[in-house]
Structure formats: structure tokens, C-alpha cells
Amino acid sequence: DSVLTLDTTFQAVYNNKYLFVRVEAEESQVNKLDFSPTRINRDMMAVFRTAHVEFFLDPDLLGKSAGQVVANIQGAIYDAIVCGGTKDWRYDVVVRSKKGDKKWYLMVAFPFIDKGVAVTNVFGMFPHSSPLIAFNACRSNALNGQKATQWSKTPAHSYDRPAKYGILV
Image (cartoon, rainbow, N blue to C red; front, side, top):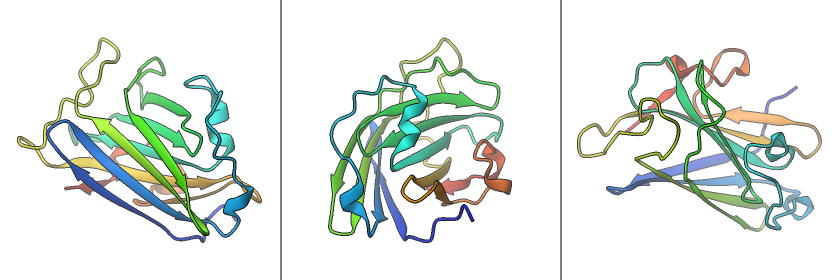
């Protein structure tokens, strides 16, 4: 069974520069997790080896492509444009984590303008003109086997399905 049964909640707020997301993840074995700052280079698959959250954002609501940002509790980042996009995209997110009592927290600041590849500006959305964004948050836990949960369930746990994401207002 690959379904995570631990509670996970998130909150999202924004200002004119950032979308801020705070994740609170229940973890009875939080003391087994390593919160030390990462030595993992950006966009390495090693980001997936510890507790992490995958965020998917489709600000144009077309359901054809999305920005994927994976952030783990050590501050490692993997970012890509999924569904025919590029892994060379670099999105200047800010990631912080915190260990709690039987839980961990992950805070991510997503700028509304990316400084990435020379394609359509994926995050050209501004809250004053369009306060909607297709969004998904998928929490994974590497303890006792990889398990995951999703905010907006996509078929067969295939996360790169922007047409199936929920709408964040």
C-alpha cells in the first residue's frame, strides 16, 4: 500500500510578490528524520530520499503544463516544467523547515515571476488580476517505505496531470 495515513495540512496566503505555503505533516517518528542542511545539488533525484512535498502549479489554468517544485526538509529543491516542459527551469523559491513534536513543518515562498527558461513565463500570475491557480500538494514520506498523499487526487498517483489539480483561490 503506497497511501500515507498520517495527517497533512497546508495553508496558503499571498502578497503582491509571493505565494506562501506552509505544510504541517504528522510524523510519529520525527526523531528519525535528518533536518540538517542539505549538500544535495539542485535538481538531483536525492531530494526524494527524505520527507518532502511536491508542489504543482498551473497559473494559466489550461491544464497542459505545470511547474513542479519538490522541497524536502533539508532544504533541497528539484524544479521542472512537467508535461512537455524542461528540467532546466530554475524557480527561485525559498524553503524552510522545522522539526516539531511528532510533526514537521515545511514553508515555501513561491515568487509570482520566475527567472527561468526562455519560454512563456510560467508564473506570470499576479493576485490582483487573477487570484486563481491550479494547484496540487503531494506529501511523501521515506520512512518505512515510500508512501504519499495528495491534496487533489490524480489518477493512479500520476502527479503530472494539471487538468486534475484543484483550484487554489
